[in-house]
Length: 482
Image (cartoon, rainbow, N blue to C red; front, side, top):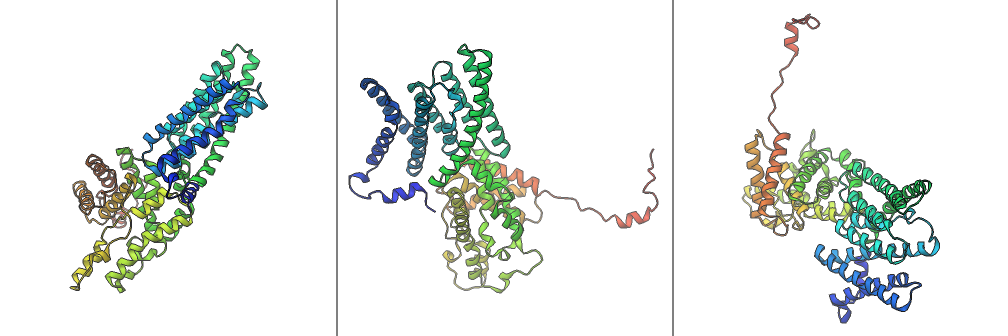
């Protein structure tokens, strides 16, 4: 399903003056300025109104340039720019309404850091810092924040950004939201104390700050879901939901294709560790790996990891038909992911995790028959990995499967196998679009070798105890040493 940004882009003129990139950017900036200007200029003299609108215009231009540097891809910049613009506009109007309706009420009862929190979770900490600065600046210009409250508001914004910038597990989400509530309560109390308020007022401000913190957390999580649905942005919170084993597709994999599920979990562990090693997104890599083979749910018995205790259906099919069935799981997986509204980043990993690789087993089987073979008939028709996370999943998928097929895995042999996988993908031009350096690939090989060596290490064969126990019957409860 297309996001709001994609639908609006489809309505935009494809030719003429408005089709240029400059015209789009200019209209977007003008629209944001038109939205925030009335709130900022309300009740001011013409000179003051002009000055405050000029400041807002400068802020918008600076923010646009800043976003252009941090989000070089045009599609992301358009989407993220709209998200940031809406959050800034909402924050400006929130403080404006507070100045009109309840000017004497503590500003800390408001969800002050909500815009910065949502910007951090959707776009990233740099965008969160810009939104925080714009929001606090709007509060100062409208007279809602003054004196120690300005520093306290900035402190709550920074705490919210720091708490929401790395949600790699649910524990961090709980800790982060609790931190926001605690910091808002302390900041509100400190602001009141520094302003010379009495003790009872300070305690009251602390309570209002805690209430504001709870409202902030609830509002942030609610807005997060709305923005994700409207703009097709994927947050860490959404990825954590998908990583849960009780998620619908994960549960189906567990019950209908247990071998694929086990492979997906192992691939996810490898991908997450590799992403951490090279500075990619570990959570996206892990979740993408969990779902990369979800298309095998359509025909699980045709994949070797799910054939325990049953006949191999490929024994009765031609190599070309088998290759067609195997390669179809990428297309079917992407369709299944879209039906379940998985994030676009995860769907991209599903489409790209095999690239245009050759289904080597059935290609070699067809070649051995002596009949003419067209290599293109045995290649996946997917897309080449276009992100580091997709490339990591491709290499983890191939490396785990190759090492699992080894008869006597030892650390040197495992390293040789992993290097062979990486070199074959490079030689086949599967990593041409991925932003991986040779240093990144070397670190990936080291991580995969270490983890796979720990997983598939040689094991001793345990002897049967039944015969030995028969020879020493009656000595079970009589230790030789006291």
